[in-house]
Image 1 (cartoon, rainbow, N blue to C red):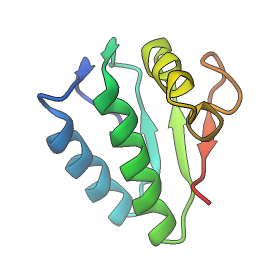
Image 2: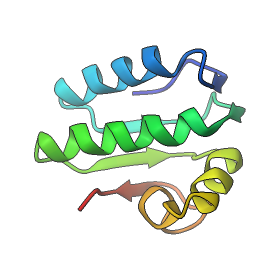
Image 3: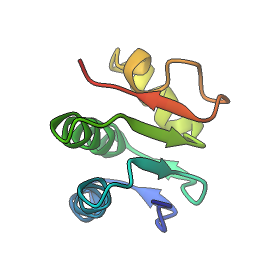
Length: 98
């Protein structure tokens, strides 16, 4: 699923999570962030929710073009190894929740 949003913030996170969960339920476990230019902490929560949904479906979530903002926030919260294990410039990243 390619995100259409240019920003993921607390204002649109609930809708973004629902879109991602619907894609995962439909078998699309790739989230493309190429349109996203700005993130706040809600983006970290979105990715963790998608990882949970993918894990429950027995799938692995793949993240493409993770924005630097999201990588920095993931690092700040100590979940960068889950969200961006290869760093912000690596793509694709398979994000798995153990």
